[in-house]
Each structure stands twice: as structure tokens, then as C-alpha cells.
Length: 231
Image (cartoon, rainbow, N blue to C red; front, side, top):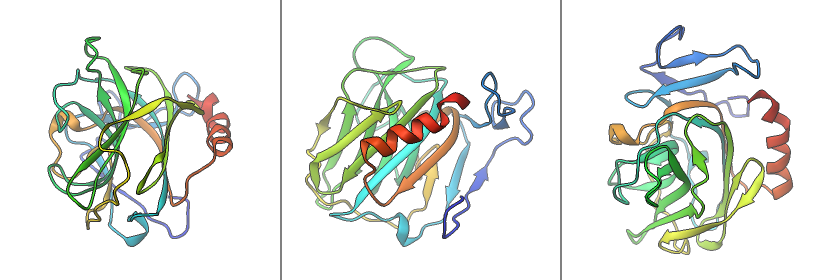
């Protein structure tokens, strides 16, 4: 973490150095072999302790941003589990979910290896709200710059971005007009608390950012352009 206050995360169950391992730090900062953290989809994640700056209530704006390269997107089976590649999460499986940003396997019949970018949270009334891309844009073994902006409680503000550009999305559950549940869980990269193995990220994530504001289209495009040559 390069921001103030510094919130460093703990790496869980990675193999360091990577070598031929399926997890750990890898790469040499070249276009053909960029530096990144590899997740094995089984028991790797980064954990950041809970603090109030990571809580988002009704009226709070958020931007979630990450570079990702998924390796094993699994075909969608049900809305509540087992086919998500979780990028960022503050919540617990089958419990409170302040926010989750993930790739969910396609249900379009295209099979494994393709998925939608998704944001979800659980409202204070207990109802879930899922916002997804509509075009199944994510594929295995490809680098993507992903982002989501939103003001909690106002569904019309939800916006997903792919490679610096807005991409069409829709609420597949709920409408985004409810305030979120808060929780005492830390932020996790690569999974959520108590998530199933098949929800843990399998692939590479070199960059994750959480903002307490909704970045503009220009901000997100500039972030993408500043880094796309690395991936």
C-alpha cells in the first residue's frame, strides 16, 4: 500500500519465490513477463485488517479497480456461489457483504473459460444486489484492466469499465437502490471470508485499488493508459 494511512496486507499460503509454483510473486516487469501475484484458486489470498476507511454506507461513493488475468473461469451454476473468481471482497460467504468485485462464469452456454465482470452487495434489508456486464467479455489467460464505480443506494450510478472504457451492465438481482450492510471483516484480495474453493481467484492480480470516491471516465482511462504497456 502506497497511500496514507498505510494498510499493508498479509499474503496467505503463497509459495515464495515462485519458481515453478502455481502461486506467489512472479515476473520481471517486462511485457512478456510482467510482475504480478499468482493465485492458485485453492488457498491463496491477501488479507488487509478491518478499519472504518474500508466501510461504505448509504450515500458513500466507491471505485474498485484491478488488473487481472484469470486462468480458470468456471461455467456458471447458481447465483449464490461456486463459480466466481473473486477479485476484491469485504464480506463473508452466505453472510454480510459490504462489497464484492468478481468475475462470474458465463451462463450463456458458452462453457468454461468465459465470464462477466460483476459487483454485488447485500442490502440492509437482507436483499442482494448484483450488477453484471451483459456481453460476457472476460476470457481466460488475457490481461484486463477492470473497474467499477457506484454511489451506494443509487442504482443508476453503477458503472463497469473494461480496459479504460465503460461497458454495458445491468442489475441481474436487485436494483442498487438499497443501503448496504456493514461488517467487521477485513478486505480480502482473491476471496471472501469463508468462500468456497471454487470462488477463489485462479490467475494473476498485480494491482488492486479501492477509492472512497467515484472516479470519472477520464480518471479511469488515464489509469489504464498509464499501465497498459506493462501487461
